[in-house]
Image (cartoon, rainbow, N blue to C red):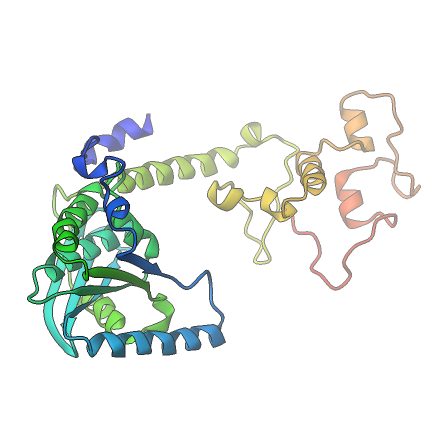
Length: 336
């Protein structure tokens, strides 16, 4: 199987029964009010983005004025080239001064894994700073930030355990200590977060023979390989069915199968069950029309009731039959 071929590449170790992961003693169980997350609540339009930029500027200014606050900007870069590996960067500031820069090759990992590594670097360095009472971490992945304080089993668990082990004694020592993770949309190209981004892009991490490889990276490789095999199979009419409707995009490329976001075809129904049934009937050519009756020797009328076509086919209905309404302003149906 495909997973058997890729699994030996996996180098990550796990702690299935880590003490930090026991319910009741987990970091968020012990310090729920001192680990905070602030996000953007979904995608933002241009006006909202600018308002959020102003909000970030205010937060940064206030943090710089607090002598006990360590400010962290983290980011990760996942190059497309096979000969380079992911990079994680963490920048630490006291006031306006950058006091530490940590840039590491992250190995063969996913973008969330690399971001998690960057957060680990930032937190582990921040708790070592003198007179540190508050940590503010700016990241573009709130998902990775939440995973950083989750000690349970998952890809990158080692980074999460390191974060929990660094924060636990620091938070326990002083009731005034706290950490805040703040989301920064990458499209903002905002101040110190953009600095972290630039450091990542400038750092060259050439591939090595046996890189650190995360579980999610192996999963991604397996998924990509299976997806490519699926697309190849789909080109065979014996596999997909000779009557399958090959739909096209506006650029005339053929739609191919995908598992992402509910698949390629059914999301067009928008959750409408009746519409989904009709889409399936049309694409599979299993609709109660003349061509279907003829194919399966069903004793029903096979000609179209418009009297313009001796056989009621799918193509006739989609393109020509005057009994159906079409969007005159929209593009014509595209299929081959």
